[in-house]
Length: 265
Ligand SMILES: [Fe+2]
Ligand SMILES: [Fe+2]
Image (cartoon, rainbow, N blue to C red; front, side):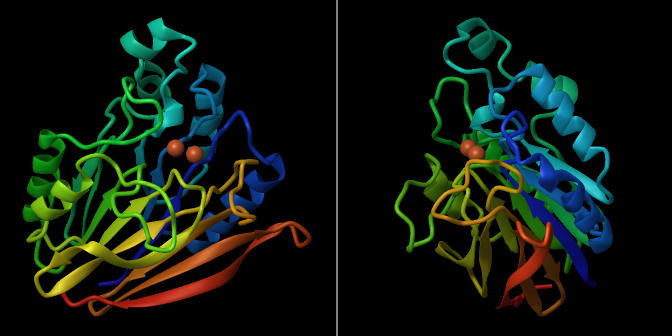
């Protein structure tokens, strides 16, 4: 069965290109995805107003929604009380009461885990319980279901990039080797990428690592324009398309598509 997923990341309300919002919502409406996955950094400074704006935008989107927080969604170090004692309160008030959401239906198993920490500056990490939660979610999925993990920090940095993966990512990937993960959707880098996992061999198939660029932030990196991903997963194939913002045209256009063999499902 085919499943369509829109992967958005690093919206950064508080510092967005406002002209992008309406065309982005319209493009997603036209795609009519089964799932919208948002891989963190919904806000710039974790302010209530920014979360309210993010919530209003998410409410416009069709399909099921899974959102994980990013390192920008916990109040800054300059506000230590909010950061250390009420770190996730605003995310939980405006976005979702659970920092980690999951669902399993007849065609999909999707789980988001929170890799951001109030005690870390901007790096990400994974703990033992999260490793177990992912295993339990995927092992409880029906045969052939599309298995999707959503995180903010990359678990496997593409070889073409500098940078570091989330702490304990390698152990986590090893822990999930027999889970049949199809997709790992991440953000944080503000750069788009799709490729086979380099550290994750899953017996007879590989997971596809998908990084989303920033959909709406003014802080683009490496000269890369704003973008988001559209994934189509079938029994034997995963297609990862990139929709890129065209300033002149004032709309998103498909600029890349990569195909990967899906051996399970
Ligand atoms: Fe970001
Ligand atoms: Fe980030």
